[in-house]
Length: 114
Length: 114
Image (tube, one colour):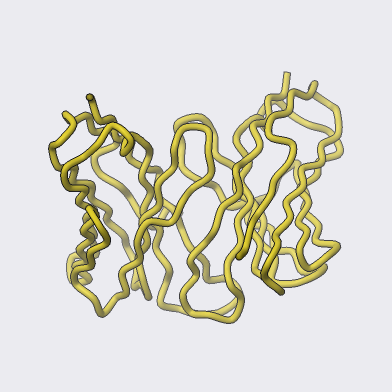
């Protein structure tokens, strides 16, 4: 069966510090991968998605970047965090090449920038 | 822009009552999906209804879709305290291509009082 992991679960970082969040997917090959951010009490904002190794699409201009060094690994990064980067970050995957884009989500990372 | 808009934003009911949540959208869809999010957790897929379907059931869940009105409803029957969560609709557009993807609404907060 497929599983998705995210870490860390929670993170408190000062403004201006770097960020690295990791997401890994097991039990499936060549998944589509997604990074979302959810502000408190708000909906999901799609940040990045990837259809393969090294293939990243950015949805909104921002202080963040994403990379996919392995088929099963998706990393969200920042060189210098802003207060506005605080939020709940969710990684998700879906089966590639299908018309039904059902998504499977990880447990999330709660990021607080102080 | 957000494709799915849920209504109401918040709903509070007594255990045992039915909960009805609505979702409206703007453009043509291939399918519509409902997800649940418990506080501080990732989203979990509940049910998917295709554009050529009008109603679908899964346990205590009933989903309807009216493509002429571009709306869907999620009914949870005989609610339980464990149903307390946020519920999101997500639309999967009928157009294909690298830029087509699920779009989530802002969510409905359901509270079920014991």
